[in-house]
Image (cartoon, rainbow, N blue to C red; front, side, top):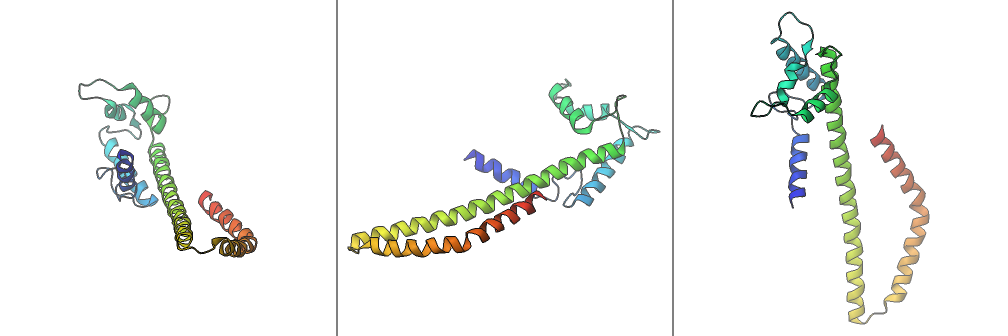
Length: 182
């Protein structure tokens, strides 16, 4: 049950207008995300006057705990995310590029979740059809009908359709998968 709640919470964050919090700014589109990142960089840079680059120590403050100690894992994650230069500074382009890469991963995750939901719904429909077919067969057996002749004719009918629509359906799925990757 907790997994479902976490999934719903993750989906609400992914599909929100403010995926990086309201302090970051709106980011429903990539252009708005870049504009918000640009604004945040300018705000952070205003704390270090007469500089065009942002010192990485500004981000290290994010990794401090309540007692003032640095969480080394958070610092490493920030370094991997923002990639400051050897002197410990970050340019506006590097900052926006890093935020944009996270934004793209977030949107890819959202698309993957959407595709998974569509596949789950299709599979659910197929399972329902199979379930009701089996229920109807059991009801017919209980009522005393000879199901084997009917089942044989239905099987022959669906077998012929599988040869007619098999190649078309496989091409459909190839095209669908090509759209997701591209």
